[in-house]
Length: 120
Image (cartoon, rainbow, N blue to C red; front, side, top):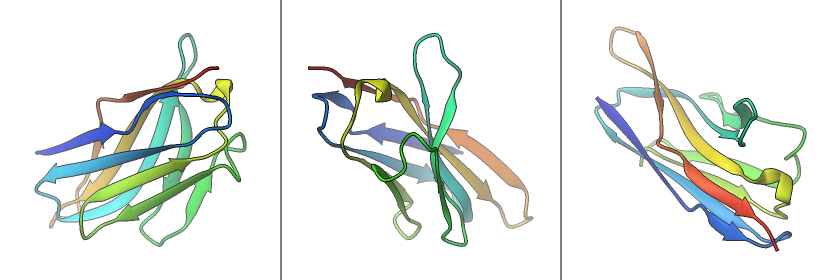
């Protein structure tokens, strides 16, 4: 029903920046929350940042002051601006979307993931 396509990952040196994008396609009645998660090899998937329907945002302590999440519901897109990247940020980043239909039923969707590698 809904597909998320992520882009913007790649290789960057420490201190560099990347901008991840998430584009949603399909039938979306309303978007509740949008978030970015990441998973490094051998580690649990963790929440990086989230933006809620009321506009509030939440960030992991490790990325506060460096990452900025945004969303454009009219275009069904979201972005994660990542500045001052460090090797510890190396992971596969996933976009997550929570939606609601006309019956107020909620649905959850995940993107395929995009690799971010921070190395000199």
